[in-house]
Image 1: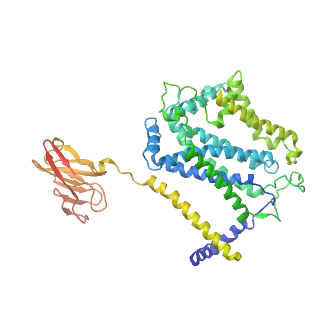
Image 2: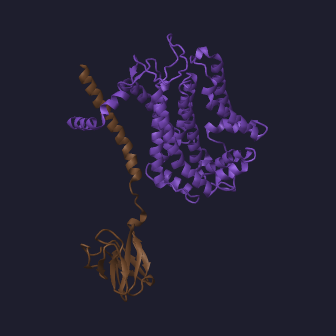
Image 3: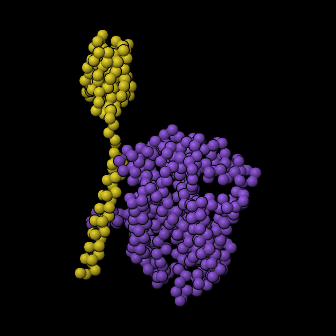
Length: 366
Length: 139
């Protein structure tokens, strides 16, 4: 106790550490009616920390060459003590992260938290989602299994429908005419260094936006009124709110524990959930396995490409949908955030979620 | 129970739980990163006699470490760890001088492994060697 206090006094005298902690923990007040959906940011930070930790551990044994990649992953799974655990947590964790990211985005949409003055927070968050999907896509190739090889072949091939530059884009993504060592090399570099670096910077910017603008008050309760968009900067304060620590940290911890339990539950009780049989065969560029499908979070895109008469049309629709979502704060400028007062938006929201689920199920069974 | 002791109880309980979870997570991590036993760390190494000429040295891997076998005179073989006893650099054989030299700090060893000069504190570690027909069994 004495040593801890001495270290605290030492740091406080030099860096004013207690003041920083108080400002960001006990004196950082959140809206009284804040709900569990607001914990998803902390959940995602934790899950990404798990991904970084397990990713670094996998790098110890992984070998990014077409000759060795599959064998090195098999060695991790079958020979290295607890390698199966590290790799399973990493692979399943990616899926749980996408799930949490989608929930985070949906809750922000439903509560209208993307609206002015939080457009920058939304943009940063949306690019974080796209980067996460990029990390999922690049990571998918690394085991160099049949699944990896053909999923990447199909995913990169879909860019060929872009007018004029399609074939150049495909060659550029693959580093050659076909998926091979150049593809593995660039996907590996992007997955372990390029994307994580960008991702880290963007997370910092996202958190800066959240902290600088202030947490949005959930648009529920009888006294909530839409505020006009600010013309000058104003930090949103919640003077009679609850302290971040310990009140909200306890809630954060509970939901984080739930997601970690979900992650470990899949790892221990349904380890094959995200590993179809093609994931256990080494890549063979001459044999396409039957029924190759992308991961569940890309199934909507996969099915969209199939239902349109031309792939270009499918790609265009996907591009428009993603762009509309990206610039939504600049299109939807009304200050109203209460779902009950936004029937058109809530209808589109429900229809969008239903469409995503329906296309995914259709894609899975098609 | 007053607020102070309840808080203390909570802090101790959470600390104990955190320590337990850290311990549970640390074990797989430790095992994952621990050096793995390879089959070659216990067995004998076989080298044919023809690989080592008279007055010549042959370097090889012995139980995960560099080692050297030397034919000092016709039919007289000796084997040593090739790791200098000074700071762990790998020695090299100088056939014209009939001695080992450590290139890092100029440690010198005789053909029998004894220190001739320089900073090495002790002789090279010897490795048992036996003749078996045309082969040398080392280890």
